[in-house]
Amino acid sequence: MKSLNAALLLVIGLCLIPPQAAYAADYGLSVRTWFPSLDGKVQKGTALDFKDNLGIENKNLMSVDLIFGEEGKFQFNYDNFSFDGANNPAAGYSFDGISYNPADRVKATTEFTYIAVKWLPTYNAKSERNFSWLFGISNSKIKTKMEAPGKNAEKTFKSFAPIVGARYEIGTTTPTSYYGEIAASVTGSNKYSYASEVGVKRKISEKAGFVAGYRYLAAKSGSNDEYAKISLSGPFLQLNYRF
Image (tube, helix red, strand yellow):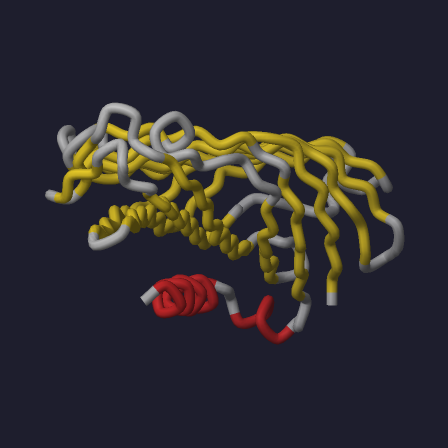
């Protein structure tokens, strides 16, 4: 299902690309290493903090982005991260109808998937100062699994929503440029995702370059009593290549 959602969003994004951009065969690939701090909670019974209750720790992450068209107006983002932890519940808790007590060694796994197809209609790579609104669609999923001897539970929370945001870049036509981007997908107080980043881009050749920046990504899905939420924030390094 995860790969199906990614493929579906990619197909929708490709359908939005005008024929002249498609035939130009101008595509870009970005590979990013991210060093974020993790924060989050899940509730399907007891409200559980990822770090304090489940023992989940920070970890370095990798993600891949695709860019389409000469101006880079169409972007496809795919993030899929898995976090693990193990802990003995100090006071006991329940999750999805199963009770875990201090004698249980509970292994917890949280998987976070964020997929976005974005369109920047007025983005112009040949302009020194560049502003564009940002539109698109996103799909986020937070899956938490608890495993202990004879006690296994799993719960998935999903959200699918339109994206609205903006991007501003200075120095686009020079070897070094500076940018900021923010995007939001909100369908209610308990269903949302926010993605923002700022960075410095440096071209090292006509086709290649790198980016150093800071990224924030957060998502929540569910209801008041049953939900999962996660936020990741920290610096990143990224390599870009245009084909």
